[in-house]
Structures are given as structure tokens and as C-alpha cells.
Image (tube, rainbow, N blue to C red):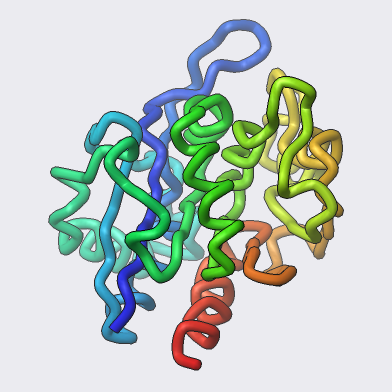
Length: 232
């Protein structure tokens, strides 16, 4: 059995270009689906957030429209209720990459607000990458990679192939013209070799021990890729 660290945003809003605070948090599917996949495979999962703050679930991620119907929403709500750790997560500052066999970052717009500028998270990501152990990040979660840049803007993730929520998807979601910055643009500026798949279709990119998924639909395929490596 492996021990997997799941990092979740503590933000409950995303500050837009005009200063508006858009309510958000973690995207339910991107937390619940990987968590269940890891647990069903027999692994221990530890959830951590900045400051140990219980995470906020983006209300939009629990809408019938976003999930193809109410049945999926009911499954997600039930799944969230079963994750006791969401009420008392570990403080991210107390989580060390060397104590885990894999690290996974969930998405949602929340990481654009806090993890993108969280030095503690940045240090964890750098350590996880250097460890050679599976490091998985989905959707807007790769915003956390921005915190790995040093004073000169260099990041150890530069040159890695990776994906994340695309400009096209952000446009379709209605936020491209409202955001301070777009994830795809910033990852490219960081030096990431951004790999764009079809909008809202499953798309997973694996480069060495870095596993990234483009969107919510990529959550399960991403977790499965990581599990394949952990089972070797």
C-alpha cells in the first residue's frame, strides 16, 4: 500500500481583473474521483490545504449542467460526505514530499488564487519532482507550478511536457476576458511545453514522473496513470 498526498486549495474565491471576487474553491470531480480511485486501489490518502483550512467546494462543480445530470451530482455529494479529512485537513506546511509515495494536486479555480503564489506549495512541488515519484496535477491545479519559479523566473518544470485548463476552455467557461491571467499562457511563460487536447475531452500527459490532466474529464484517467506506476 502506498501513501498519497492530495493537495487541495483553501481559497473560496478567485479575484478577477476588475477586482471582483468570484466564488470558487476545489472542483468536486477533480477531488472525489481521484480520491476514490486511490482508496479503491488500497492506498492511504492524506489531504492537505494551505493552513489546514477545510476546503470550499465550488458550487458550480455540483450543478447538474456541469455533470451531465443530477445522478452524477448525487454521487459527488455522497463522495464528498465520505471524505472525513475534508473537515480537518493537514496543514500544507507540515506535509513533506519524502513522506509520500505520490503527490496529487486537485483543481478548480481556487489554485489560481492561493497555490499559484504559495511558496510552501512551490517547495513541495520541487521536492516531489526531484523525488522521481508520481506527481499528478489536474485542470487548474498546474497554477501551483507558478510558485516554483525562482527570483529570476526559472523553474525546474521548464521543459516538461504538461497540460492544464486551456485558453479555449476558459473562453468557453466565460472567464477568459475576465481573468487577470490565463493558465495556459502563464505555463508557457514558465517554460512548460504545453500540450493542448480537445476542449473538455480527457487528455493526460505524462513526462517522466510528472502526470497532468487537462480538465475535469481527465481526473480519472490521470489517477489511473498514476496507479499504474504505483503498482509496478
